[in-house]
Length: 80
Image 1: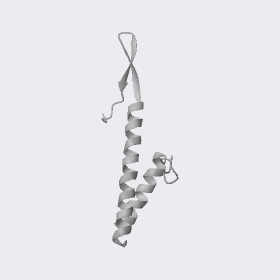
Image 2: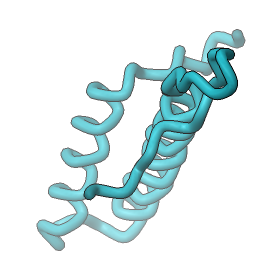
Image 3: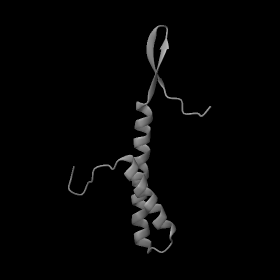
Image 4: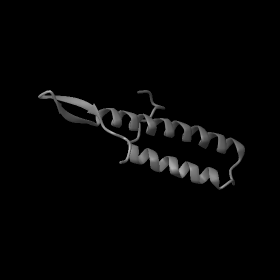
């Protein structure tokens, strides 16, 4: 990791930072350059959070017994 790179924030911290960025952008009181910088930061935070959610979804599996064997099955995402 280079000096300029920071470790990926955990999901909760990344989401909180993203919410702060959105709130600041929505204020409409930023100069264009600052707004663009925040927008880029927000896009990166959003991508990081989405990646963490996809990884978590992949890891969450239910074990289902089929033909006397335990078989991993994707966790259902639809609400009943």
